[in-house]
Length: 48
Length: 469
Image 1 (cartoon, rainbow over the protein chains, first blue to last red):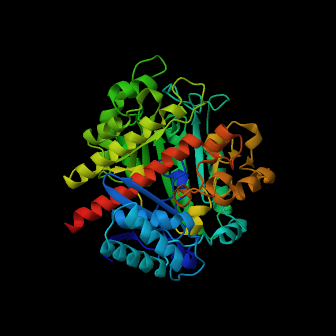
Image 2: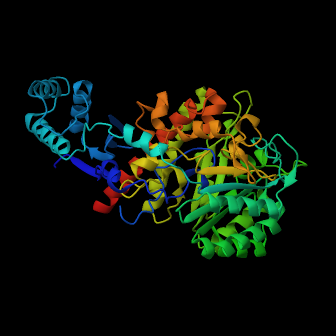
Image 3: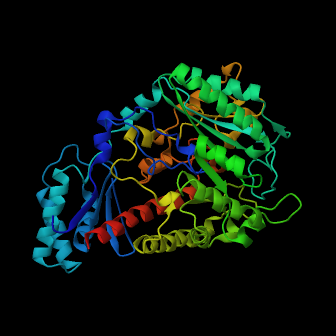
């Protein structure tokens, strides 16, 4: 593509297939304690 | 759903439903905007309708003055993205997430209120100087042990269990913290569990022994400090009024270094008194900290320090200012991590995690010094949210179920918001405080969240740009 640089492909759609294991950190247990943020959290599923 | 914006010289197009994020040139940017006016989300990839494509081509030439080749290239790239299911895709997750939320949930994290007491008198404290609408109290080892037993017993097959020592100020009950860590470790092998302990502290009582213990046992520590001395000392005084900055900063600097500048956050709160909070984040960086978070105050709107809707333009421009400086320092080799600008676009959380909310009231519970269970630390002391206790478990299943079904699709304001995959519907306590419902929204918080996401993605674009050149 000449005019587009893709930073992220369709990762959400892909994650439906192998997601939902629940091993990831609870979002509020990180730094915030007042605002729910999940976009910056890590996935802990090695099979995704 | 398409969300597009320009920031710091970058044209960014997000295909919200697929998670795809593109940096584009002006022609593609304008073409996507014109297409989005009329093109519905597509069930399957396919060619753009001929009539619409022709109309968009015409408008790009006439109204925007783009040349023919330029327009051809843009339309060709757009078709390529559609074919790859990375543009104009449909939201197919609703049923998936509703089913996901209905599954049997386990408890995986506890916020232990190890001390309802504090040695500071922070003016914005939602815990009312540690007391949470109640009396001062310290959690006994027995209550804490029952809480850990409750967590193990209700965690199903989940291996990692999270326990945050919170307060008030947890170091005011330090011996019990140590005993509970020891007890938790003793149960790991028996039940095939692994505890991740964390600590949130104001630092007043921090000493070498505590730092050594934390460096061995705590997977993260949250160090409360608000930024510049005058900002911190105004809102975080001791009970007799003296500022806390001078005592605490050297301890936190030593602690951060002793942890190799990893697995901690210096965490501040900004209020109406420091709407120029980017300076506080940068102050942390200048003090040598590498991991930091500065968050908007949670307060009743009639408090003088509460953020007001008219403060938003300044707050949003502060995030922009911070983002530009953040990139600059990264490029100069003196970068730092700001919690809200961290985003993992490729290996981040799965869609189930993104849409199902923070887990409060189900996967995540707060435990008071007496062993009462609440949906999270923010609800502690509000009797209508009392869920049960560590002896009997969850008895108020009506409130538990309300939280269980709380997800992005249960929130009217989230349905058409591009940020829903990044904030997971926001904080239930904020929604309750401002909107009177856990499925409501805190509008000021939403605007800030959206700006932070836009900045975080722009930063990714800028750093990717740097790598290429």
